[in-house]
Length: 257
Ligand SMILES: Cc1cc2nc3c(=O)[nH]c(=O)nc-3n(C[C@H](O)[C@H](O)[C@H](O)COP(=O)(O)OP(=O)(O)OC[C@H]3O[C@@H](n4cnc5c(N)ncnc54)[C@H](O)[C@@H]3O)c2cc1C
Image 1 (cartoon, rainbow, N blue to C red):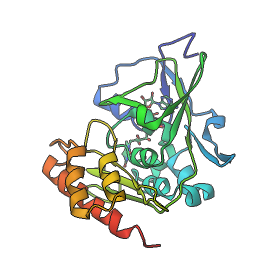
Image 2 (image 1 turned 180 degrees about the vertical axis):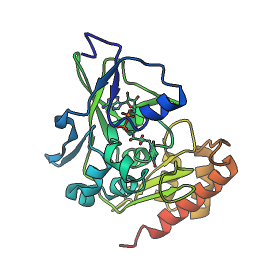
Image 3 (image 1 turned 135 degrees about the vertical axis):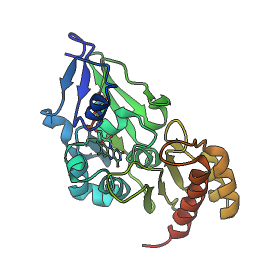
Image 4 (image 1 turned 45 degrees about the vertical axis):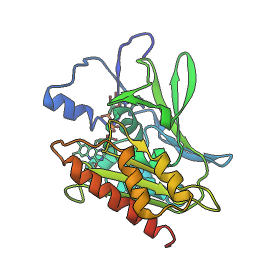
């Protein structure tokens, strides 16, 4: 239908689309309802690779036993998204496609080296998460393509997630960070949201920590890898300071169970 009857805008849980509709900023008028496609809701592990269907809701993620052991940082993110109503309707595919730099699942997916599975009548593409966003709210998705799933290779090392917002529920992140502590000589993996036009990994900070740099030095390097702005939710200065504090929490807590 996307190919033959397009352009059509995919609708999943509609928790972002309805906000745009209510604000009068939704330009699109033709939609494709994905919600009944149960095939896209599955959370599975095949040959060691975790696959989360694009229509998996936050409630599905919170209740998934496989995710609680394989990807606890994503479960932690899902628990802090919206409230129960949003968790029942909002989907991971919608969070990815909506491409907000404040999307709470995105740092967890960036830190886990996820791969986005994208499908159209032309076939399937596997897009590394690090290549999915090409600018502020811009992705590599073509108009006839759907996100069908996200795949996550096995992760070794303790996972960590922290969101800082105005309050615990129904608040968009002022800053959000996810990390994986490196094991046996592997560097840590750290990603941050709400500090740049897209969610960002911190390769220089990761390399510094891996090579034994002090936390203070890593915090200095971090400042060059982010580009926060002042906006309605926060100031650039606050975001810089909290990013450094979150890095310290991640690093200091990495050995704890
Ligand atoms: C009150 C409230 C609180 C919220 N709190 C949070 C929060 O704490 N953290 C957070 O990150 N977000 C939050 N959100 C935003 C929203 O809930 C999430 O981004 C959610 O994951 C969107 O998923 P959805 O299925 O509802 O997407 P939709 O609204 O259905 O779609 C969003 C966009 O993605 C596209 N799309 C959806 N699915 C696909 C697909 N499979 N393939 C291609 N394109 C697709 C749609 O065309 C649309 O452009 C909140 C929203 C509200 C209204």
